[in-house]
Length: 331
Image 1 (cartoon, rainbow, N blue to C red):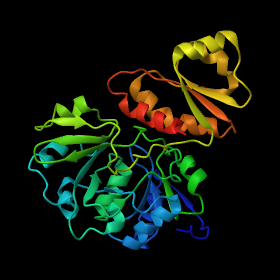
Image 2: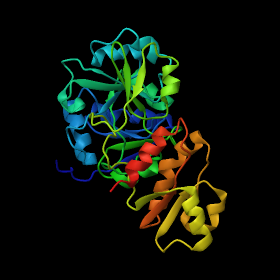
Image 3: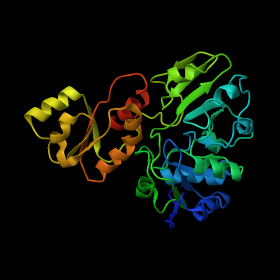
Image 4: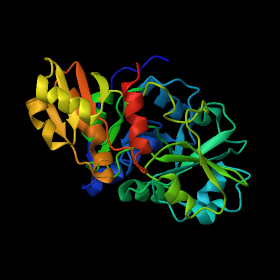
């Protein structure tokens, strides 16, 4: 699908009340706007307007059979989009919404195929960003919103990243500063007697299972069509190479990285290896997640050929981070 002619992309500030009011105008006009969530910035369109939603695919260069997630303003709105909702779902989700959890449920028959990629399921979530939530609730609005980046490229956690990838393709971006979580939501398929994690996210299986009355299973390496489940995804322009701490330490002792190589690392002993071409991040899980995409973007802005990433810990709760990095490094 061809990309439309360039338009002027407005840069709106969430700290400005007039800008916040203006942020709702693109949706009324059937246009696209990038909006902040706690996970990443989303490229949003009125989910009830098929023509507007179709523009998401052309702006991103995203295949039209790839389903979108609909962001809603309350738990009660689940019934506007889904049917055959298991009885346990609403009490369960009230413990995590607003928050980084997407429910996959059977869609209502009146939901347009353009939102679901022609599938018989719908992804729903209530975002935990006060600015976006007020907009959704005040306008009784639901928005279809994948990440606000060109297809398979780095997800944006800063408005600057949105502009770098989509300037001239969308009507506006609403800047609310850095996203507080930093990776995309956990996707949970909800059925009457069980639930399945189809995309790892900030809410891990242990956290969800502690509040869920049915067993939850995490599906790895599946081919179910959900957002983010492409082998190649979340990629900067530079090639990403994943290296363990020991390998990088040996390189630090024996040689300097080649020209055009930068590093994303957390170990202090690697500071000298990357010098001016590195970004050091925290080894604490939540801080690492929040910084991941913006650090890769920062390195990519330097015109590097390769980004060497120090593999983070293999511990529970890091599954989404390892998932994103593996897709970023896939060739």
